[in-house]
Image (cartoon, rainbow, N blue to C red):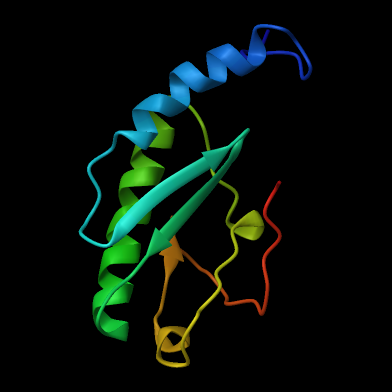
Length: 111
């Protein structure tokens, strides 16, 4: 037997919101903000330099991964996308759970 809610179940969204609320309240480094829509999570990181961006993003992702482990959820590195808004930002080395993430030219957000 496994844990979870059937997709499309009436209680699924409510249970997910209860779980996700804790992540949205997680203390993150300065310049890091989390947004969520349904089961997608967006981390926005702003910093004055590529080095500070790298440090803040990696620390925030570490906190997010640890939160996921505490509620028995895993984030898929292959589904995690990065977008840079400046050329310097593309030089940052961002990792999630030991996997280096690659920058993409665009991301699709749910509406």
